[in-house]
Length: 422
Image 1 (tube, rainbow, N blue to C red):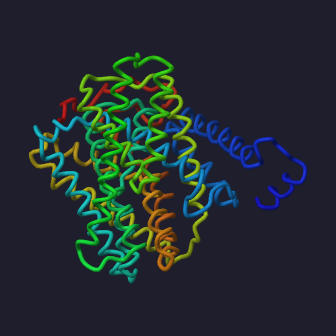
Image 2: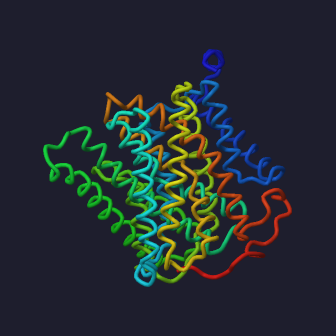
Image 3: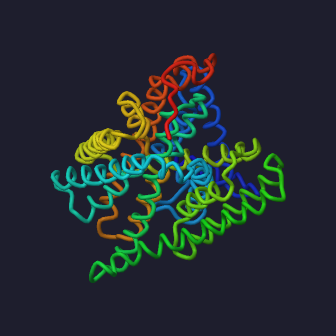
């Protein structure tokens, strides 16, 4: 791949630069493969995007540096921010008042995931300085993958909604704690007060930026039609500006967008759908994000020891999330069968886990390479495998069309338990 790039550079002089040509062609191939995977295999397009990025990464495509930085970091943060803003806008806080067991379920599965991964890796000989950050990375389920799976399979129902809420909340915990962990690694704390301070700063700045974003979007919706093309531009521009500003001030850009979406839901409780143009723009950003994540993750160094550690992390994570969802299922309004499929739908890991890992690796030069060598393969495997598991889970729950017949899918919600979950 490096020889091919060097050959191109000798005679190709595009005005926008050679990387623009490379990424344009890579995204075109990803779009084609994603379409073919959905049409002929019945799996979501994200599987095709990830496979293309994986092949490019294994072939030595040097389109992004690790840890993420510069333009690549901003594009991933922006894509995640757009998805999390939309996901946050689907979570009314009154759910937790009327059904607090949903929040208990979320905290239980995240806490058990952290404990299980931390204990498993420590038992296998991974140093505490690496096992603790890896446990934080494992907390984050992927609402970005889950939303793409639901959109591509036309899934809708209580299992889809519950899984999306739990995945979004786990992302909130991972982003807040991961940013705080990175700050502590850069400036070691003397006591618990100093250790708590970075988390308070990250969360405070993110809440402030999220509140500002929600207010500005609310003002825009008061004077503009939600279906207008100009409203789309305003929405995306505000999210991009808040993401850049939150990161500059020391907060978390994706966390600010997520909180902004949740606050907007309280200020604007009436149901509203993103304009079609916004969905198209978000689709382009998400495709770029999945290709970029898999390209970066595929460049990790693989070995037999790393493979065992990665498999152990994945196994501990899946079991812990299933147990956490099961323990919190009591009194939550869901059947045990639904709880099983919810836990399976939370299997994917993707850009949010990569952002958390990138922050921690950039802050810790000592154990950063060890963390990256385990985190990147785990993220890559669970971006592909998790999307497949989530697809099958939503189908088995009766909320999506049959995965094997993507071109002739039945309408969503044609089978299964339609009992609404709070």
